[in-house]
Image (cartoon, rainbow, N blue to C red; front, side):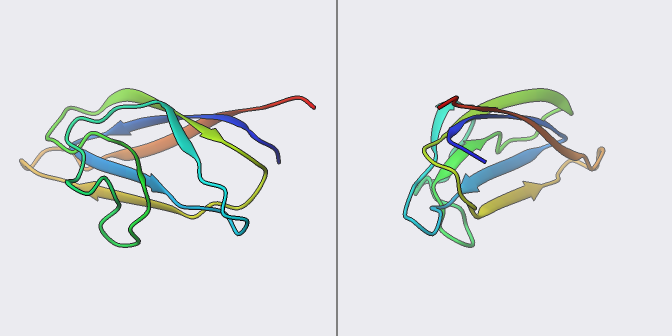
Length: 104
């Protein structure tokens, strides 16, 4: 509904990559506080080539992590979420969020 900071909370067992593309006006979200455990070599998503916003691309326990993303304007932004499971444990991926719009 407006520009501002989105905080994403991610609980995942093993690897994930979150990437966000531009809106129809060409506005690109940028990381404000992020996790980059093992970013891809290109720092782009593997399917749509969106800029990588955060990742934990390694085997891990399902613990809560968070990243913050600054959205420069109101709009609809495409998102790519990539998930990997290894090591035969739990298969978990939960994403929730908080959005704090900038007051005009």
